Image 1 (cartoon, rainbow, N blue to C red):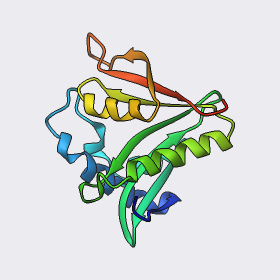
Image 2: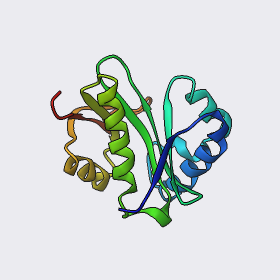
Image 3: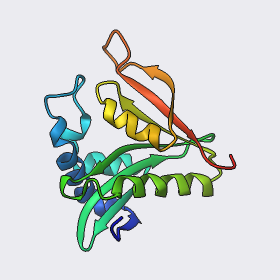
Image 4: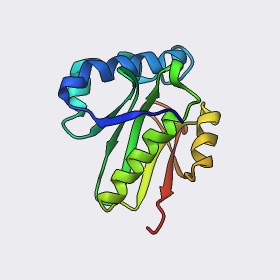
Length: 159
């Protein structure tokens, strides 16, 4: 693993977060149905999300390399928009961001962590399953007849 610097993001980081999301999700443009909302992220939309969620920014030296958003409802933590820029993939950054969220969940008394993964992305699902996440139910995006994604959950150690 590289020496990542992870830190909680603030509203001042909104443009950086939006740029990381757009760039990291670009490979999925035109390949997902429904399309990813990450393609349309703006600093304003990120600021709105930061009113009810937290974000973590990851840096490789001075360069932004990835991010993740998370929320902590009463019984679990939920992470979304896990994004790693292509130049930093396969170096442990996604795992470091997930571990950060899991650590925050534990600290905040949330013994379980959840995320949604598209059915159209079986490699991503397999990655999360290797980290201990398991499917708990299928969900459907608005306007679609059948399931389009799975909710995965991990029970944290000791929880």
